[in-house]
Length: 90
Image 1 (cartoon, rainbow, N blue to C red):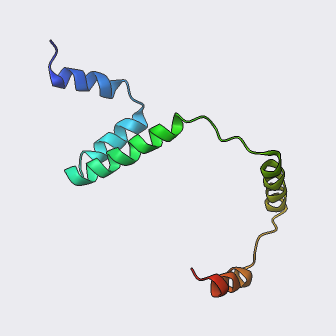
Image 2: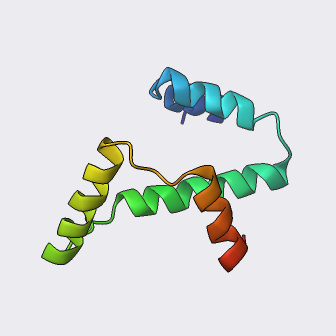
């Protein structure tokens, strides 16, 4: 049976360079922080396994309108954003 070190070297070697960098960085934080990061990663992986959300025709139409507005650069001004926050809170 192979040692844990040999197995872990194999696993790490099969990861992308970016993931190897992430694991190196994670190894430098506390066990509690590592557990929090692991839980977050597992949740994101679970979400990746979900089928894509299907939009209704109405939702698709609303999205297309919103994208067209954004592509034209029609965004709220700073004053409009501040007025919205004043009405509804942050």
